[in-house]
Image 1 (cartoon, rainbow, N blue to C red):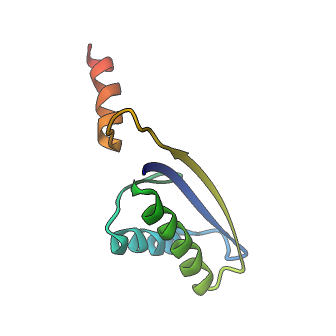
Image 2 (tube, one colour):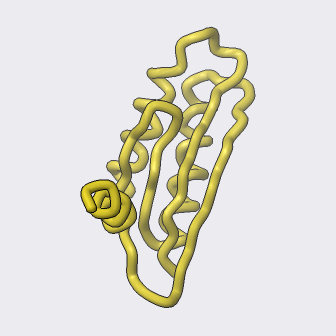
Length: 100
């Protein structure tokens, strides 16, 4: 089953800046071969359910390995089985309505 998720991984106990941890998670997603899009407060990811959730787990493992003693994560998940729809399809649909 295909999933589109919005992931926000927040390391706790590492100071104010978290960009190095975000970058590490982006590398995990790139290595996993998933389609993803970084935004200001998280990352959208699309792919097979098992691959996406394996990558989420790998992000946690990576952030802990970088020294974060705690992590809190917000995850929104969407699936649909009536038709195939990508992240870019969803964005294009809204843009068409704005232009129309």
